[in-house]
Length: 435
Image (tube, rainbow, N blue to C red):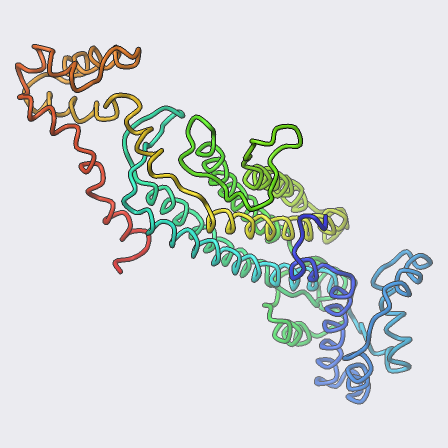
C-alpha cells in the first residue's frame, strides 16, 4: 500500500493490528464454541475473552517470535498465551493455521467490499445528479473517435451510471461469495474439531460455513472477487478516458476542476492538464493487474499449499486500497466536472450539418429511392463538406437528384436537432426509473 493512494478507513483493515484483532476473535469464538459443547472448560473460554478482549497485541513482539518460529500463527498464539496465561492451552484446539488465516482474509475482504460499495453509491449519486443536470444538453456522439450523430451529455453520464450500477450488483454478489468461514482442521475433515464450532464462528464473524474447505477455502471465490474489482477498474478507466478526450484543447467540452493555486506544468504556466483522470487510468491498470495472480491462486496442490499466501498478502490490501482511492477520486472528478455546452454546440456544428446525413438517407429511401442510390446521393454531397467546400444543407438543396424527391422544407426538417433527443426520457426512465 502506497500512502499517496491510500485512504485511512480502507488501509486500517489491512494493518497488522486489525489482522491480529480478527485472529483473536476467531480463536476466542472457537474456544467459546468448544466450551459450549463441553470440549474445554467454560472458565477457560471466559478467561480468553477477559484477557484478550481489550488487549493491545504487540506487533513487534509477535514479529520477534516469528523470527524464531518462522510461523506467523504460532507466533501470535505464543504472544496470546503471554497475555491470557495457562488457559491459553485450550485455544486453537483441533484447528489448523488456515482456519485462522482464511477466515480472517474473508472477514477483511467483506469489510473492504462494504467500503467499496459505499464508494460506488457516492459515485452513482454524483453521476445521477450531473446526468439530470445535462439531460438535454446536446453534444456530438462519436464512433471511432469521429463525429457520428447528436446525443446529450446527460446520456453519456446515464450510460456510466448504468455501468456502475451493474458494478455495484456484481460487487454485492462477490462479497457474498467470498464471505465464508473454515474451521475444519487439518485437511478439512473435522477429525479433531466439531463442525458446530465452525457454524458458531461463522455466525459470530458474519460469514457462512464453507461447504468443503479441504484445508483452505477454495480460491475460485477469491478469483471472482478480484475479477469483479478488475471489471470495476475497467469501467472507471472508460469514464476517465472519456473525460480526458473531452478536455483536449481541440474539443474542450468538459474539463476537470482546476482549483485556485493549482499548477499544470513546471515549464508551461498556461497548462490545465487532466491529471486526475490520467491518474485513475493508471490506478485502473494496477487493479486489473491483480486479477491474473488471483486466477492463478485457484490451482493449489491437493488439500493445501501456500503458493497463494504471498500473493494474497499483496493483492488483498493493494487492490482494495487502490480501488477505494480511485473511486473516491473519480467521484470528485464527476462532482466538480466543468461542462461547456457552448463548445458542445460549436463542435456539433463543426462539420456543416453532416451529422444529419442518416436522416437525409432515410428520407430519400422513404421517397422511393433505392438505399444504394440514396447512399450515393448523400455521400456525394457529404464529401465536399469534409473538404471544407460548403455546407451540407446548401449542397443538398442544389442537387437536382435530391430535390426531385425531397422538397426544400423536407430537407430542412432532416436537420432538426431535437429529433435526436426525442427518446431521452425513455432512456432515462430505463436507467433511473420512472420517477
